[in-house]
Image (cartoon, rainbow, N blue to C red; front, side, top):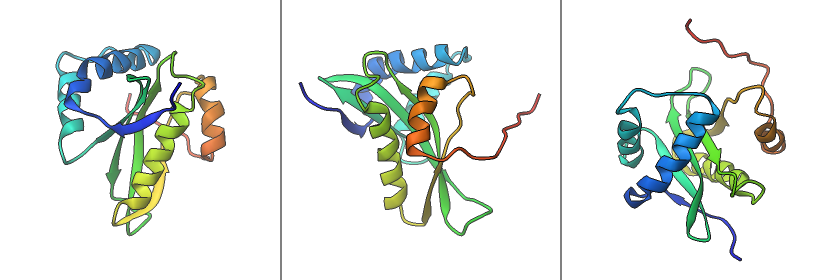
Length: 148
């Protein structure tokens, strides 16, 4: 039995990526308008904007992470926002989530003009993921607000 491979998202991953993406949206009770997922997938494959990695175990996609770099008012370098992270039921407990986060950390460290900072959000009720996040990150004092 092999380990988890982290690699860039590929066009041929679309069906498996869509399954993971749909499960992620279901977890967060999100119903996106038609075309949003199609547009996202194309943006994830483009050289500008969001970036995507997948976790592969035994030739099957078991996880995904989407992230992007942006300028910061608090630094001269850009910072990395880890926007979406999801690991399937079959991939949980395999180290895939940690490996995806660490791959984003490595991308932030390797990217020229960044300060290496990575941040992300999750729902307070996402207890399973927060157990991992508490081991690989530091809980911020910030509270997120959204436009109503």
